[in-house]
Structure formats: structure tokens, C-alpha cells
Length: 522
Image 1 (cartoon, rainbow, N blue to C red):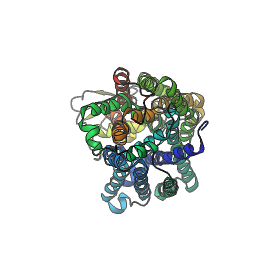
Image 2 (image 1 turned 60 degrees about the vertical axis):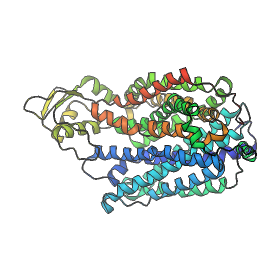
Image 3 (image 1 turned 45 degrees about the vertical axis):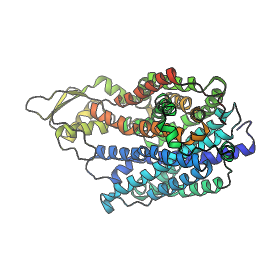
Image 4 (image 1 turned 180 degrees about the vertical axis):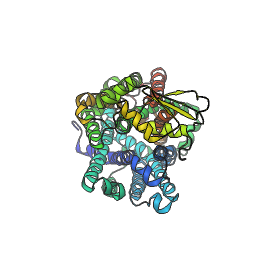
């Protein structure tokens, strides 16, 4: 933190702890979703259970905007400090309680109900956390350095990721796979109590934001911040533009570059979890300083052009980057895709999240999706429920052993061969995804704070941020995975973040104003 005095470093550190907590929880649940699908949802359909676990993951994001409204109002009426002290306590307790939840085998349908309830509590608290932290730091920062100061908050997301990966990896290696699946997965959630204790202790020592304290002393507080923020078109229009022209694209670029990339490595390319964690972690180490680079650069050239460029570059290059990952991580799969055409001609096909695949079509699609195999969908043949062709081998009806034998005969790789993984190319591609993340995320805290007046800043900035990240970004893993299941193309899920990032880039370019020279005391 070059050039930042001790008092401001303490402000940044205390404010950033909530972001560490947020991303620690995010990566815990996202990384362990494959275990949760088996533990908390009805058995019998692995793909459906996995999608259900991702939907539950998204449920926590769905209520973030409600938390933004609730805690944003409190933050604009009572103060920044006390509001995000409350949010971190609720968030920490909900995260820790996941570690003591009974499983589906123990209490049946109550297991997913309780899991969803805790995810909703986490999401509600998170809705008020980030807005408070960003506002608090920006209102302490000197004029002309807000991008630099607030960019340090963004780097702590990486710390949360590293912390979660380190804890998960230590538990998996220390307990062994069987013990980890049975009970060891609980420990990472229970350890969040330590983070909570540290966060509360430090935040209790903070003073109120000087900008807010001055406004309060002058009697200029808003009596109805929600009404001013969202019921008056002048400000509501800015909220809408902030969502569609900044945070929606930022959300999908972030989640694609980190979580979906990890999911793609493990679930589609069949790379072992240790190698996946290490490669993602290396890319994060290389990319993390660019949060500060782009935050500081935004103080000089502006926030808008950096964020717009990140969105548009991501939209243009996501598909070639993920194709490149396939060739670098699992070249045998890429070779199989090129030489072995797979097609499914079927009728009576359904897309269900919770139900076990009952029809031959559903069973065939479920099998191929879990294998990470792309396939073409064709019209049903007369007299047959499903006919699948794998590299010229015709399979009538569904038989898992026959499918597996046909794939093996065609040279399908059941897992990525560690000896053939091009680690340099993989890290380079993952780092490029990370650079896009830093471009859209590094300047955005300062941008959102500067976009709104002090009296309604907490409320106004929190809602578009959490709709963008919570709805557009939080549901990305589920929507992308569902698109792959429905279409049979392992890359088709990328069209969701591409469309959102392109929309944001265009709207941001045409309609957003630059904010870097705004006076926050207005």
C-alpha cells in the first residue's frame, strides 16, 4: 500500500475483511458444490442434483438486492460503520452453521430447505456488506486517489479464494477423500468463526466515515433514501444505467474468469482437483496486482473506458480462450471431439432439475453431459426412443455400459492426462481471464461511489451492484451448466456471459458518464 498512511491502511484493512469473508464463503460453496449435490439433495440423478446445488448457490445471490435495500437504507440513515458491522455478523454466523447441517440421509427434505435458508441469510447480509465497505473507504480517500484506495478492497477477493483453497486442500489431503466426503467438508465452514471474530474486533475500533459524519452534523441526511434512490426518475435512471452499463457485465466477467473456469477444468476437462486449484491459484497470483494497477490507472484516465474495454474484450475472446483451455489441459478430449462425432436422435426429452432422468433421452443426455462430451441433437427416428451415434457406432436405446464401451473404443479420455497438460499455456489463458476480471472489477467500487450523492450513496450503489453480481453473476454457474445440458455443446454455456458482457460494454460506452473527478461531499 505504497503512499497510504497508517490510519487509511487500517480503514482499508477493516473494510476489506468482509470481502475476504464473502469470497471465502463463495469459493467454499462453489468448490464443494459437487459434494453438496450428493449430501443435501435426493439421490438418483447426479446431474440434476449438481444443478440443484448450483441453483441453491444462486439463491443466496437472489436475495442480495433485498439486503441492499434493507441495509442501504440503514447505512444512509444511521451510518456506514454500524451497518456493515451488523452485516458481517449475520454473514459469519450463517456460513458457520452450514458446517453443522444434517444431510439428506439424516433428515430428508429438511436438509436442502435448511441449506437454502442459510444461503438466503448469507445473501441478505452480503447485500449490505460491499456497499458499506466501498463507501466507507472511498469517503476516507483523498481526492484523485479513490480508484487506488478502493482497488485494495477488490484484491481481498483473491485472498478469500486462496484461503478457501488452502483450507479445502489441507482438509482433503489431511483427512483423505473418503473422510472428507463424509465429514471433513464441514471444517472449512466451521473455521469461518475465526474470520468472524477477527472482523468484528477490528470493525468495532473504527470511526464513522468523515463525509457521512459531516453531513449528519449539518443535518443533511436523507429522510427517505429508498424513495430518493429509486422512486425519482433522475436517480433511478442512473441506477439502471449502473446496472446495465457496469455491474451486470462486471458480474459475469468475474464469475466466468474464476468460478466457471474452475468448474470447466474439473467437470468438463476432467482435470484432478489439486492441479485445478494450483493452476487457478498461480493465475490469481499473477493477476491480482492488476486490481491495483487498473484502480490506480482509473484515477488518471477514468473508470469508464477501462471497465468497458474489459467487458468487450471478454465478450470477443471467451470462446477461443475456453477452446484453448481444452487443447492445453486435455488435448486427448480435443482430439476426440475433432475425430469422433457424437449425435443423439431422440424424443420425449425433458430438462428437470430435481427429478431423476426417467426417459432414455434424458438418461443419454445425462450420461454424455457428465462425461463432458459435446453431441449434436437430431430428430427422433421412427420406432426408437433414442438412437445415439458415437464415432460411427450406432446405439439404440440407453445402456450405460454400451455407451461407455463405445466412448472407450473411440478413444475418449476418462480424465486429463497430467503428462500432457500444457501448464504454461493453461496459466497464460487463465491469467488472461483474470486480467479481464481486474479491468472490470478494479475501478468499479470508486465508480459506483462517485456516481451517487452522499445522502443516498449506500442505497443507490448497493442495489445495482448486487443485482449485477447476485443475479447476472450469481446464477451464471447454474445457467451456463443448464445451457450445456440442453444443447449438448460443452461451450454453449459461455454465450450467456458473452451476451451480458457485450450488452454492458455497449451501454457503458454510449450512456455512462465519467466520474473520477467528482467531489464526494456533494
